[in-house]
Length: 242
Length: 335
Image (tube, rainbow over all chains, first blue to last red; front, side, top):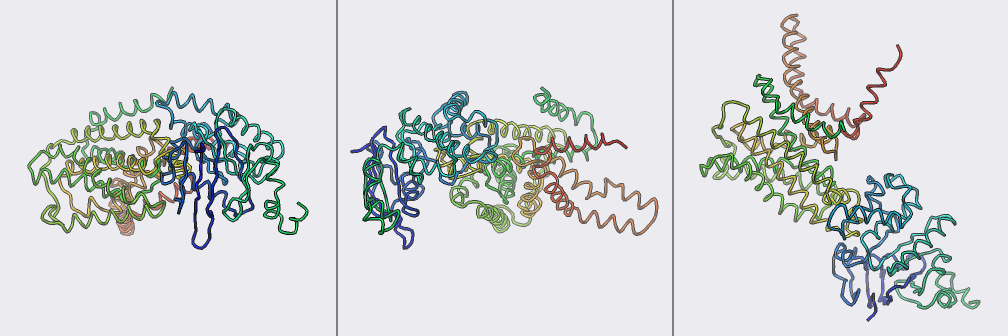
């Protein structure tokens, strides 16, 4: 059994089948990319893994144990952290307090929690914004704060939902460096991303999804040149040229 | 440094107060202020810090009051035992309520607390065999002097402030605030939001119930209209919180003082000042205006809240720096 496994999962919203029999396997230490056109079900997959929505059918396993059916906070306790595509900072708390709040999960005392929060702030390069209210941060730092807050819960698996969207080229570089640093620290990463430059350079494996179904899985180059992926993104006309 | 000594100086002043002031009317007002500190602190914890706005604090207040009163009337036990029991009974009401109603978010939870308030009032009215219905509960007060009540009220107020202070600087406090700021985020970083909302509600209910049983002991008489009153208790609790400063440790203390003072000034027509002016001048219109002002004392709450929301949206304590600056700058304006 794989380190992390989504097994034939279904999720419907009324008449829309958002996730339609999806299966994926992630090995420990990988950066696993998830791509697909808008509305293909990527964020829904995260919400299912995270326990925000219950799965209709199928099961999700982490470290050999079933996690589907658990509550969100229990899943977080098992070691799965996530960021939100539309950032959800704790607005009227400072950057430090945001990270401190999540650092309490793995620490016994306030002293230890503060140490872990310090460490995480350093790791994510948020020191200049330490005492600013989260609502006052620019978007790049807010995206970074999402990662920092998730990291302070010491996750073994981190779900990144479009953490590079809305960043300028130099911020993109920094985001990529940070994500690689997270992987190198021993955290397995699943990343949803629209910016091809980012996802192609950092992913070890990529799964392309469309209409809530897996189209193709492989290395970045395999996936990018696959005719089904090209037609999913660009339409049938481009298929012949691929 | 001043910040650290401030509360202790205040506590010293409050301890000395009944020794200096022997007028029982002012002692009475201070007992009410201290009682409101406890209620306001409870409201501040659940609504200010945890973000679960309660419109039904009277449910916990009344439960505390009835617990203390009925203990004496039905079982003949000293109603002082009811202090602890009042707090616990308020938790007994809060627990099942929170268990069910914390599935609701935002305004819907607030509406549920409003319903709880009314349900409790009706139970106290209708269940005559237990509560005596509209007749109310009457007990003989333990002390003639107000001084013992004053110190008990002070102890409860100090307990409330200490509780809030300790809680908000601990893990619980951060969890409460994170639930207020974004419940989904809180869940995603491993916080069992339902559990922590329950803790916050039960703490708040305990403090409010404690204040309720103090009220029973002090006043010696309660009926459902008084202790389960929506506007005299539940709304007043919100006003104390808002005027003093939502999610500040000392906000409810400041709010309690201001609200009790304002309501008394209006109710008594400026502590009888308007009455004597009317008598001295003999002008009939002053007498009429005075009577209107006395009768409209609840209106003063509304005006006060409008002023606070317009000029000090974070309350007197929350906007203390702003308030200080505007007073100081006015003084330095050259004439």
